[in-house]
Image (cartoon, rainbow, N blue to C red):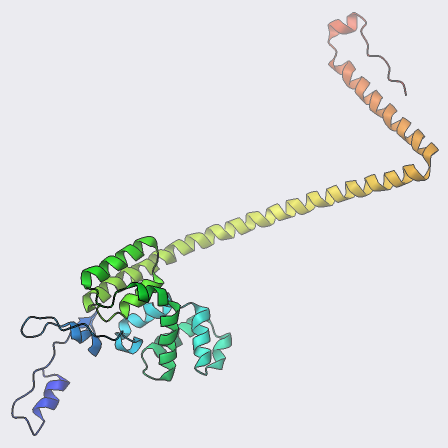
Length: 277
């Protein structure tokens, strides 16, 4: 079956023979954009020179837009971009709604899409500057590998996906690792959420215990203050009260000592001296 390009060429009145067509590369069954075709080998076997311009989101296959928006911009950053494009209703939109609009906007080629790309470039400017423009595939792959192992994902992901020297094969490789990482993060997040819920419950229980202890301590402190105030107001009464308190304490102490005496000490007539107050 002929492609659209070959059909248009064969229908051209000024040409007697069809024009040759570029090879049709695909990524996960989705045709890659024209920018990706620049990496195809020419008939003489030589790879064309790397473009001097970085790719915009509309130059990148839409297959990758979801991961780029979800990985390289936070919900807050994306919300601000959409607000600047005139979408005021996103102020109260859910994160999922924001993501869907951001993915759609990435495939457009208008002023709003330019704002989106500007936000990506500004957010990850340092990662973009660290990657040489004329780096070959091995250099780019090593940069990604080192960043991935350090856990530095978002910046290098956008810098490499938009790099003019990144081949379609390397794009798919990088995308695949980010895609699988999202599954791992999601699985780990479920465990983290369960553990967080458990910790929050334990923390609430500890707070309740602490509150009860503080209530008891406050009651004891209030009682002590009230007793001190009564002692200051009536010294004679306080002396009698202190005497009764000490007497009760001595009797309690004396009874405790008797119980602890052995039978042999009792036969020898050893008794604790009475406490006199």
